[in-house]
Length: 177
Image (cartoon, rainbow, N blue to C red; front, side, top):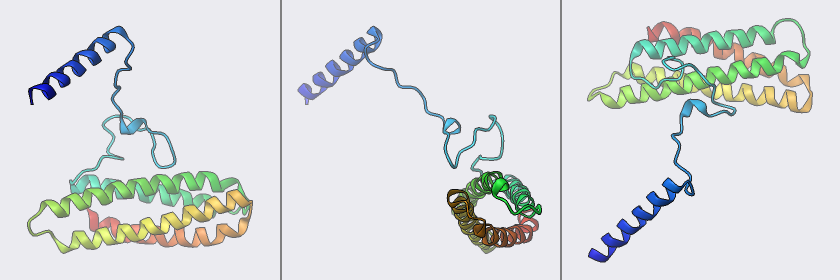
């Protein structure tokens, strides 16, 4: 046991010496908000958009923001032009709304698990959010296919599914308040 303790101390001293000499890279803190990719957006600190919270007011705000994003995407897709110029901005809005709903889902799950006797209404709301999330994934896939293959036939199913997703979110929002 003493031998292991001495070896551990030597390793710690060696790492400290290398770190001070600048030969060992220092660990930098990783921040989730700094991730860039398909499903992360950089937001200012303190923004409730992507905060996982069990507070019903924050959950309702996230669903309301997602509804705004999806309505804006639907407006882009139904603006009258059947070309693919609006597919990319609409897809970005759909993905942003998806991330908001994913965050709200995690908050709802925490709310449900934190209660000894959770309300069954919260579970029903979570199920409806999951239904919308699946629709948004399908919409993103259709819009991505439209952009990749330069084929406008993918826009019609995306628009139909997005109309249904907006309707479900409009039904859900008053229940969240």
